[in-house]
Length: 574
Image 1 (tube, rainbow, N blue to C red):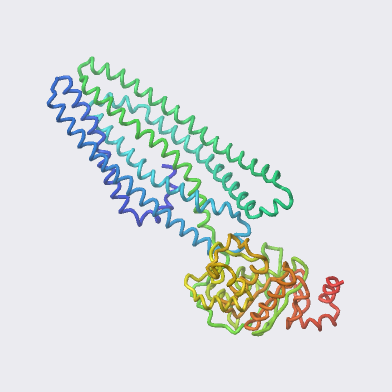
Image 2: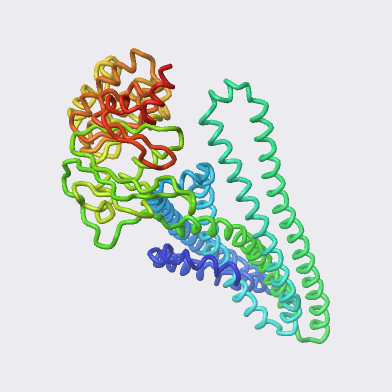
């Protein structure tokens, strides 16, 4: 069947739970066998009523009670086992996808929409789990039920059964045709819902900006347009299903009418008794639910196929920055950093860094200055291997960073960005980010170095105080000092600072600068300096322009030289 070709990639995730599914199928088989037995029981009751045998009717009533109890037990086992297996599969697939996302490059997330990724990890995966559960829980049992009931119907009367099944090929072709239409519309539905999720993620993260620009009406119009697009996509999906159900129902009704016509003819010919015909009609009635389930499940399979494609589209994405086979852990470093003829481009033919070479000694403070887009952030992002250069080599303590494991490299590099990211949780867990078990005293010591300890202790719950999402309950200076404490706890030998004080008031800046001075005494430092007043403590300044290293040297020497740094300095301070 067509959908199974797309779903076969799920089999490695289903395989560990096959024993549970097989046990569920045993219960399913028991449940299915009750279907023809129920038709036979109805025929038996019809004969007893016709004969007026009340004692046999009492016996049949008792058998009927036991029959439905056994049937219910089989159904319970089938439902619980199938649900447990499918939910466990979804959990493992979700963990696999999330772990895969953690290994993708930084630029993948720069070009992706957060809402779309969230939707794939939640709604798309839930839909896949529901479809798998229904396939084993409804589709397979329905197929087995139809086979069992049809076998019983052939036993009663072959001609009558063939009459019932004559429309089956046409129904199968129609169901397949409708399924393809549903797949196309489901893809549009998933895409429109992902667009809507992305918009909500963006807007909720920038509520203050919306208020500041009085853009509420603009956002409402954007939301309404995407919501209408989603409504239309979903309506088109439901429209196909709405057409499918009456068409299939009409064909089934024609089949039933044919059964009554042929059945009357068979009774008149003496080939069929009235009680047998009643049992046959009961069997045909038992086919209704399985046929409805097959039709609906095929529709679900086609709709779920779009979600399967979106999930494996993520898993098929490969990071460009990878560990080499046999990569070894980076030993404890001193902080030597060397760029050897390094060139880098985000897109072919558009170089961002061109033939950059320099050496930085342990404990040296280097400031990177230059116009916006000169390549400063790109240069420092190459050190922890957020990206790999297309040409040249980067060495730390003489070791090519491409030959070591990513985790061992990044564990020895501290980063304090301009835009601080904090997470919902306690202050202590934010400082010790990435550590499941941490020493609270070490966290306190890091906070003291970062000039944030006294503020934390003044809070009602101290280090156990929970902060809101993204740390919006803290001031800019407090968030910066928490980020510095995070870097201090890591005890890095290489530190990258992206102008950590550019958005602070004078008092907060003084506290942050004092904390930074303490931190910078311990390691090699790269400072991205947007304000030249922050480079005074630097041992050397690297001036970048259009991806090239134009000048390097002591700040005072460069001022005297009168080159590009002197021009930038004069423009800023004049």
